Amino acid sequence: MVKKLEINPAAKALIFDLDGTLADTMPVHFWAYKNILVDYGIDFTPELFAAMAGVPAVQTIQLLNEKFGTRMNPEKIGHLKEAEYEKNMHKMKPIQPVVDLAKQYYGKLPMAVGTGGYKRLAWKTMEIIGLDKYFEILVPSEDVKHPKPHPETFLKCAELLGVQPGVCQVFEDGELGIQAANAAGMMSTLVTDFYEVTIGEEI
Figure 1 (cartoon, helix red, strand yellow):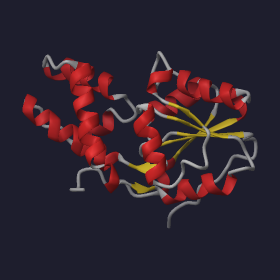
Figure 2: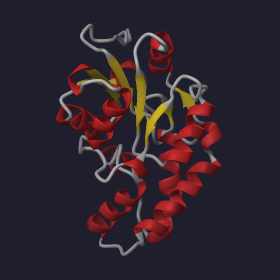
Figure 3: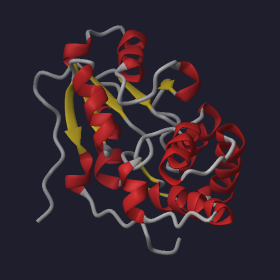
Figure 4: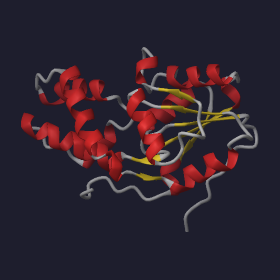
C-alpha cells in the first residue's frame, strides 16, 4: 500500500524540486546522458545516475571526468546532453501524488519550484505536465552560484516567497536535495516513498 503524501501542519510555504519530484523526467535524463556518454567510453548505469541525482549537467560531467579520468568539456557536453534531453521531453509524465498535492494547495499556501535544471527547460517541463499556471516562482541553476546540496536554491525560493526558511516544507527525490533542504533549516519530504521509480527502462 502506497503511503499518502501530506503537508506538515507547521508548513506555511511549499517548495518543490522538479525533476523526479513533480515530473517523472528521470528516465528521459538518464537516456540523454547514456546516449551522449557512450561516445566517450562511459557506460552510464542507473546506479551512477542515482548517485548524481539533482546535480546540474555541467557539474555531472565534471564529476564523471574525475571518476573516469576523461577530459570532456563540461560546458559543451552538458549542453549536448540537454539538447538530447529536450528531443525526448514530450515522453515525460507527471508524478501524480506530488502534482495532486501542488494543485490541492494552490492558492492556499505560497509555492515555488527550486531546480538544478536550466530555466527554459524547467518552464517547458512545467508546461508539459500542466503545472505552469500553478507556479510563478521558479529558481533554476542559472539563478544560483552554488547548486544543491548547498542550500542556496531553497533559501532563494523562501526569499522570493517572503517566508522564513523554518516554515518551508521541501519536496525532493534526491539525497542531495534533502541535504540542501536540511542545510536551509527547512522541513523535508522524500517523495520517492510515494511512487515507483523506473530509471533504466527504455522510454
